[in-house]
Length: 280
Figure 1 (tube, rainbow, N blue to C red):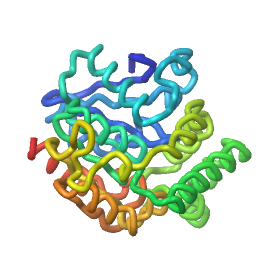
Figure 2 (cartoon, rainbow, N blue to C red):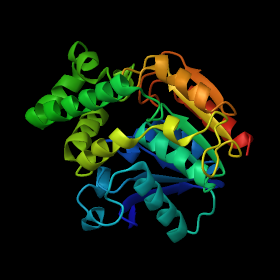
Figure 3 (cartoon, rainbow, N blue to C red):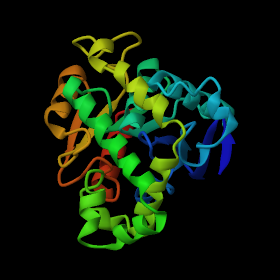
């Protein structure tokens, strides 16, 4: 792991470059279930955004990438790619990271985009629900001792109640992974900035009826994959809005998957990733 442009970056594998981006309050390790299927065929660059994961406490997180907006985070990813000499990688992102991936595609900075439950296709109520749910989980995590969080993660009755909003099958992540994810959400110094920036995040305001918008996404191969059991950014109606605003994209439902779907069904998620890159 190295620090680049205020981000914590871990690079593995070989092949065409693929940049992986997490959601708000999350960390790069959410992609771990997919790595066995990726590192043999992709040069994988997994990123912790400034203010999140291993980059939560970096002084550079207070610099020019700290606004927490999709635009600022996309700037950070472009800076990482420039520093690593990675030109127009495939990009995949989840939630906030999915929105950043789409922004990179809109700029022409991505060879292909795979957006898993991307943020920004909400209505006013959906935005309030998302912010309230994640902020509530963050507050609860901060109020509960870390040892108890791990105990709850190991309890088959408590586990789906506590972690179910984010994963349809949290037991597949394991107690240690769930506890580490919860700790990352609590520790994320960039959370407040990004949550505030969400109020301005609306793809309907950016994209025209043909999905072009300034710079255009119609010329970038895009796959939008959405867990049908997503409780943070619910599949209905938000996946429908994404279909309407991105008519040239391929839209893939992920049955029985939650908001962070990678441990729920790694093979379906890999299929969405490779479907995007095959169109590039």
